Length: 293
Image 1 (tube, one colour):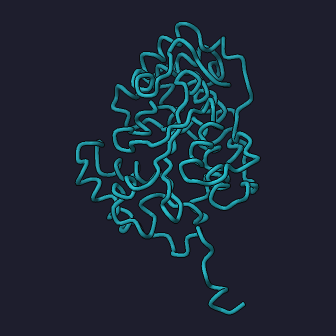
Image 2 (cartoon, rainbow, N blue to C red):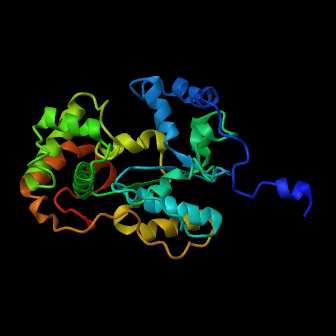
Image 3 (cartoon, rainbow, N blue to C red):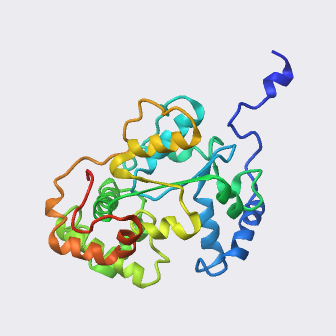
């Protein structure tokens, strides 16, 4: 093997170093000019595009929608691009599958404004196969509630600011309500309170899905449902004319519970009110929760 062969980058792997912050901001400036009123401020627009993953060839763009099989999709996209299952592991007492969220740091995927060839993130998004996933708002809300409770139980720093706000805005007592059905109702009231305050402190794991995805901007080509990821994977591969990767078990699932104690009539009514836009945009029935919690 010659030296030139040794230094030749592998297909699909980024060879250039990560762009500096100035170049990243420049890549989203055209979007700010085109969409001046789409976000509350320039920084929130930049963060929207920054949390969109693309491969080296920009064939697709994945907009994560937290608590809707994001880890499973990232593992699928890894296998799709590199022909091997994502088998490396990294976990801690709170987060069971952290490795999938390090793909951009490993320079295997890029966050859209970080891509060395992207000078206009909005235009690049329009030229890629645009992907996202959704989940029934009721089971997603319950999953989000269990997730923030798990952070409390693990003594994790994750969501510590949000846990403080849950107490202040919804009277959530972490010594009594953690993991309890009455705590879930208070969690929903907290989500509603954050929305009423403009959503500026809301987290993507808990806020409405339309806020994460922004279908008016992403204009998704394929929307996968967390309740049937196999159909989503098949459709993506058909569009890209690639074989479907095998051995893709679900990632980062929480232990199953009986949701009936949580998804009461009162809770479902509140969810229908808080997440009205999600039900309208993605066609879920507010009276019929779907999927495993």
